[in-house]
Image: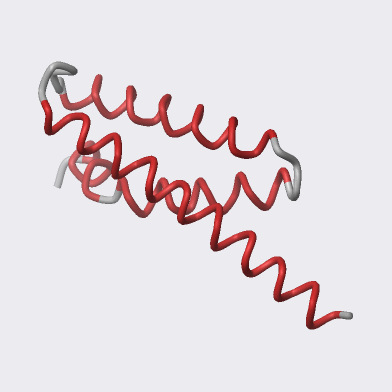
Length: 90
């Protein structure tokens, strides 16, 4: 299987993990949301370039919304796990 096909197949998982990592790195800072969206947009454009997708196609923007949603889910999961970890240590 081609490495680009694998990258495309695992995009939601990759963005979920990226969201988790970004949220854990920046902790409770407000800038984490801006950086998360910026990383999502850059990752999306990388996938668009790799797969020769057309930005005027609706399916491309559905992919983008999927990336944003999974990135936000990753960030929320990181925040939730961090909140419960701090509560259990107190």
